[in-house]
Amino acid sequence: MAYMIDLKTFTDKRGNLTVIEKIIPFNFKRIFYIYGVDNSTRGGHRHKTVYQAAICLQGSCHIYCNDGKIETEFFLDKPNKCLILEPKDWHTMDRFTTDAILMVLASDFFDPDDYIFEPYNK
Image (cartoon, rainbow, N blue to C red):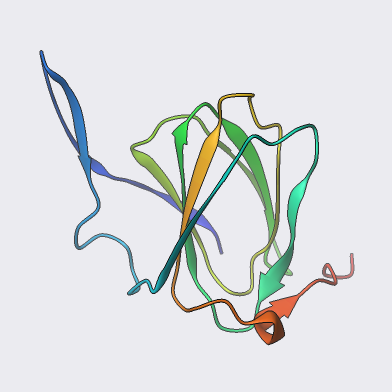
């Protein structure tokens, strides 16, 4: 089941510094980011083995998740909030603000055979 974690952030008069260290529950091999999104919905899949951590570095977006039993929705609008997606979490991403930058850390390299596009039956 998808869940949120807080990333450690240090704040002083100079600004903020957020650290991703020893908190992501998997080792990551791939980083990608999504930006310049129109009104489209992204995602629409789950994985066989890949875990992901999603962080909206700028702006905001909405993420819908369904693990086959529970449907949940998340609103990412702070760069110190991280959404952990397990392989079983079928997810979509939408409602991107025009300035949104969504960074995703993935536990493995891209493999088209790891994707499952069919949503769970209701």
